[in-house]
Length: 301
Image 1 (tube, rainbow, N blue to C red):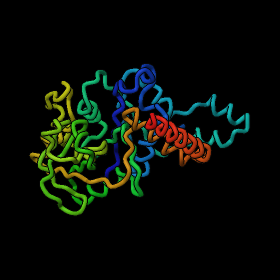
Image 2 (tube, helix red, strand yellow):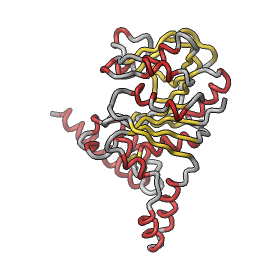
Image 3 (cartoon, rainbow, N blue to C red):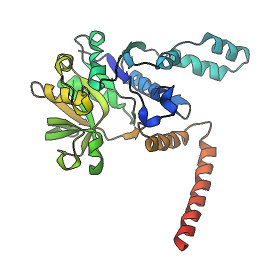
Image 4 (cartoon, rainbow, N blue to C red):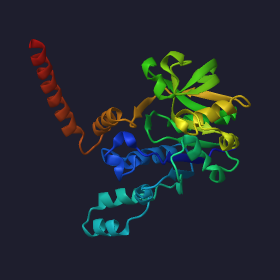
């Protein structure tokens, strides 16, 4: 069956970005001039996804507004002859993909958010795309997972190696064997293991291709780490009755779920932005020279 649908969980409280996220969804925090969630929607579109369900929460209405038309703004831009900005604004509304929205009333975990997509997904395979990870590769990561599914007809989770000291921040796989280059048969999935108990350094990185059987498991899944319904736990349960593979991502991952990663990503994307790349490059060179001079001064003391 063709993979046509994707679910984007966007109900988190965004506490790591307070106070900015007190009144603004973290998914609307921009990378240069584009909200992070727009990058995710565009990846879905490039991957052949036709329908997206965005699971939101309270104070997240601006996400829906962002993808909606804004007649007053468009009229103002048209009257002022700002054609490029007009086309840019309209292109967000006319992405050529169907967007649907539902709410998660309480922040009960990623697994609970995915369960709310059950009626939307039905009996089809579907993608899950988390907004904290932006992925760069010639073939979009979601499309890579779809390509794997088209061959195996099995759930497939994106992973990549992370520094061992960071494994406790992620869901981690226990590899069983490598079926073919970059495709791993998984023995178990563990949510945020202690560093000394981690079964590997392969971390789950925010892209999933799941079969609809996951919903029945989530419906009966007991809360796990943090008192929340963990998607990783449900995937581990499903792996006991049907195959779940791990796909190793070899592209570039940008973690925008923390302040340092967000700033690094903003700089990297800024260096390729046609409007600011040259000025930003010169500024970074200048700042680099000043910081190097400052470091040398400190060492002399």
